[in-house]
Image (cartoon, rainbow, N blue to C red; front, side, top):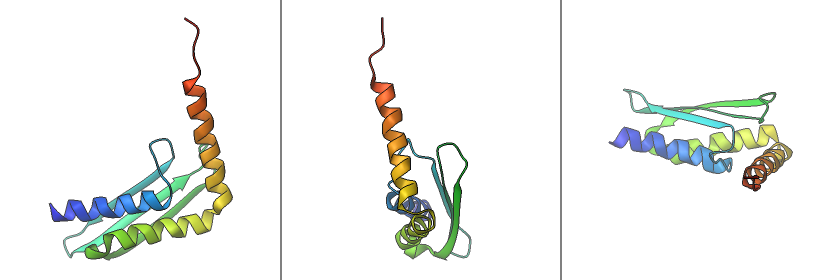
Length: 104
């Protein structure tokens, strides 16, 4: 289904530009409207929810990957690299805590 493919392509490009994974508080939803335009709503949050950065983008569905990447880069610029470094430190700390052996 072409419209689903275009929406998913946009969302994946958005997540990739933010180094998103299943442990990071990042959301992106893209839809293709009846007129063929793709609409993306995205956000990234600090793990505690105190800082939230949002973005919206629209454009031709054929430009899905570019729309997603550009939206992610806008958030990266607005939030700053320190924000993403801190997020990765948090993710690694949580992962390390989850990998510690437990007593039987």
